[in-house]
Image (cartoon, rainbow over all chains, first blue to last red; front, side, top):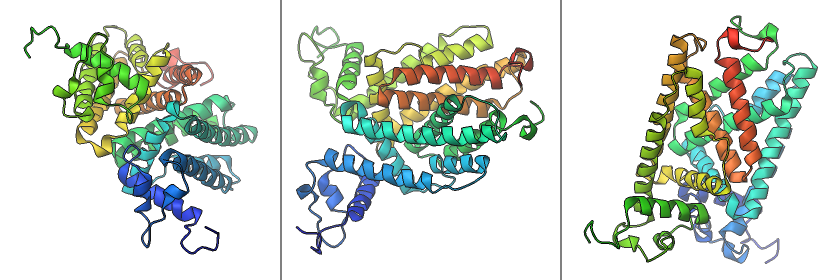
Length: 205
Length: 205
């Protein structure tokens, strides 16, 4: 096939189909044929392009991570506190619909395969490193300009990320949007109490 | 078969074999036959006892949860701070070997199936409820006797559990024991800074 072949699905179309199939079926039940089913007009016959579902998913994870990287890079809040909340909005979005919850859960399924798949492991390690370096950078900026207390940026970033991660995992697996909203609120409170400089902190501390 | 039949594996033997097979193969690749392989002397022929692996795993989750419940109940520290740390020791053990990490990861795989399996969903909801009620109870006890600040016990319990959960998930999927140790230390610091009464807290607050 050539690029001009009208039947050739674009990368984006394949990635969208993978997203939908994963959200619907989850990882263990996913197959190349189920992703093919997501193409409305004709079969994309993806097994000509990929060895197996792991091969396709490795590509999919790379695509997702590039998108996430671009999203984080597009945050251009000058103010460190605003910037931090914008990163938290990406980690724990205030509004999540059912398909997004299912998709998050499917991502967890794939992540839990990392001990059995080196490429999955590499991609999720990259994801964590990306989030952590973004958090460290905004925390350091906040410390420099006096908005944040002089905390250990690396330790605080790890703590914030693990908490956000735990909230998503628990909420997505139990399909509990309320848990997600409460978790986000608690994380915002933690940031206010532990990170904001004394002047901006609640009076009881 | 009767209970006196020497070939009949005990429930505990089946559960141990399930634990080993899950740690080795993970959830998607698990089968009744692979659990059978974990019996050294003879095949346990578990497919006579269980419809499929989901059926066996539902039973396994219930068994695990009962064990976890008994473990929590066996904590008999009078002192609320000691008691809280004992609960955290169960959630984020200070020493975890490779098999235990793999097993944790397999549990996450099963948990991520909860949206597709009502019984899994029920068991993991019960697990979360059990942990949370244990945390709430020890926090309330600490507030009552003046060791802890007058926080919202429910919100604090949710926050502590989500953080512990995020640390385990990230560490187990990336097989990173260092991350687990750092996460536990950060959680202990959070408890000291946010929960302990002003008298016991670091001087900079």
